[in-house]
Structure formats: structure tokens, C-alpha cells
Length: 279
Image (cartoon, rainbow, N blue to C red; front, side, top):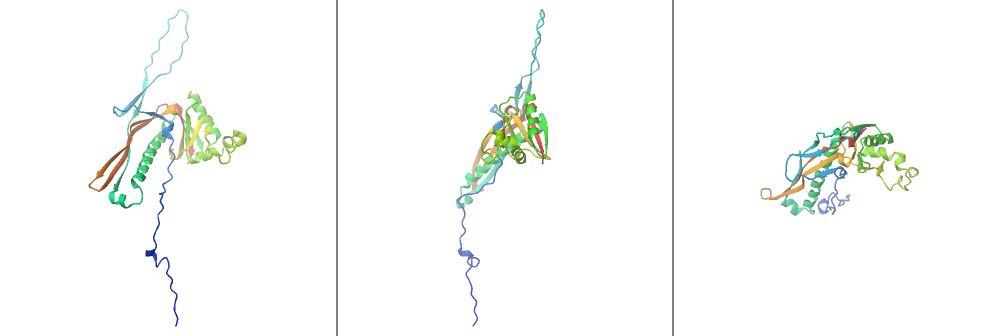
């Protein structure tokens, strides 16, 4: 009499096999944030208002004194820079009690971290979008090279921009171009052992400018890599990122929002250079 062998497989016994979940939750790779730390932060906004006026002193030139002739008195009409407070950004969640109770993770802490990142990235991105107010545009073409960086430095030098507190924030492809510039990384050029191998994946400083890579730089038909002095751009935080929470009876859960009010502006366009790389 013929018979067949029947096996108990993971398919047939699927209801008997438990699933396991890791203790840790993986998070997205977020964009690097550098713009906020590289610009001037202004906090004179505690009394409210929609605009911050920043007085700007004119430039004056010395005169030749002619013997026997009275001096000429100078008095320019001084100007101001207007920084409009017009950004109100937020990210909100509702965490229902049943979800919080049944989940094996600290969901409140997890989503709070997502709120902080989203708000910080929004501010960073708004600063990067100021490229249209740059005093100088350098066309880097399909590949940025040393000649382009020298053009950036020359623009800043010609505008009397101080040698200190200069920074460059560039996109991933532009940083890749700069890593390939031999004089920035090779030992026989820098004299720094290991720089060309693996000790430093970035180009930390070029011609006195600290370089950072962030994909928060603006991009359209070109990537707008920004090089600037700290005083070139201002960030005015009228309301720093602040939480508002409500333990809601309606949804039987916690409503939470993180929001901020701020404005960004270019104060010194001559101290801001847009190095454009073809996308």
C-alpha cells in the first residue's frame, strides 16, 4: 500500500512560530545640519514684532587737510537692514493611549526626536535658500576644482571680509569633487600623515575656510554651495523650538506639537558667495 510522507513545515506551523522584534528602532539617515551654527543668531525679539531692524554704519574716507582751510564735516544718512520674522514651522503628532500602552517602545521619545530633527532641518534649509542674495556667483560647472575655490576666496578678499569665521557648506557631489583635489588631501601636499587615506573623509579646511557637507544646500538646475563669513547671514529666533502638549479626552491620547517662529536674512551680500555646480 502506497503512502506519502507529510512534513510539518514553517508554512503549516506558521501559527506556532513567534515573530521577534529588535529592541532598537532604526532611524533614517538625516541631512547634516551646519548652517545654523555658522551664521549670526539674533535674540532681540522678546517684545514681539514682525521685523527686526539692524542699524548699519556707512563707510567713511579720510580727507586731505589743506593748510589754512577749515575741515569738512561728514554725516552720511545711515541705513538699516530689515529682518522679517515670517517663518512659523511645526510638526504635530497624536499618540493614542492604546498605542502607547501596547507598544514595546518609548514612542513619545521616538517621535519627539523626529520633531526636533524636522524643525532644525527646516531652519537649515531656509538659510541655504538665501543663495539668491549672494553678492558673487561662481560658475563651477560639472566639476568644482581648485580654480573655483580660489575664485570664491578672491571674492571674499576683495570685499574685505575678515579672514576668520569663514565657512563653506557644500553638497555631497561638490564635496566629492573637492576630495579629489590632490593638494587638499595628499600627504605630499598637506604634510599630514593619513589625510589622503582614511583618517579624514572630508576636506576640513581650505584657504582658511572650514568646509562642511550638507544636503540642505539648495538645488535646482545647479547646486548652490555657499561660502560666507559668519556675519553675512542672520537667524532671528523669535520663539525657539517649543513644545505644546494636551492630554486629550476626545482622542484618548496625547496631542503634541513642536513649533518655532523665526526669520532669516542676508546682512552682508558681499560676504556671501554662491558656488554653483551643475546638477
